[in-house]
Length: 237
Image 1 (cartoon, rainbow, N blue to C red):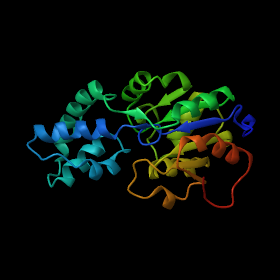
Image 2: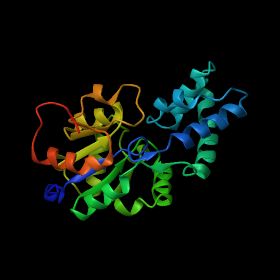
Image 3: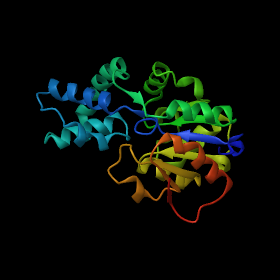
Image 4: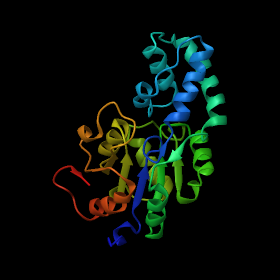
């Protein structure tokens, strides 16, 4: 059994969509409700999945553009409000934690780690999802893009999250799935783990994480390895 003592006092920061939870069904479902209201065909699920992770406004803009109907800038606020109103009521209809998440968070918390969420989703949308899925109990901080000086990939989002959680960046591991997470971690000089199953247009392996993880049963061990040694090159567990 892996010695998890290195997690004691460390801060493990997770992205939300595509990292902790598979939220694509509810996000793409909400986008398609808005598209239908505008008389536009729904966006195929697999086509829209990589668009997730940059916030709802970007998802709307890219979804409409992908269907050949670019959104005029002046209409984005209205569409955004309609999106949020619907999504807020349906954000956990189909969204679920990835396999192994609960066991992993339980293990890390018991080992003394500080856990936090750093997401480009709004904080007020993120916290209810964690509560509905019974995950909120694990986290010392949940910091959405609206609660940070700037959203990922800006380092300040990650740095602020670590500060709110009561941790130190030199004892932090960022866990994400996409370029925004990789960019924030690198800019903040934090260790980086990416999952291979999230939402990204650039394959996670090409984003050069310190470790690439395929399942949450590998996560605690990966964090320990990064907290106790500096790998010479990217690894895959």
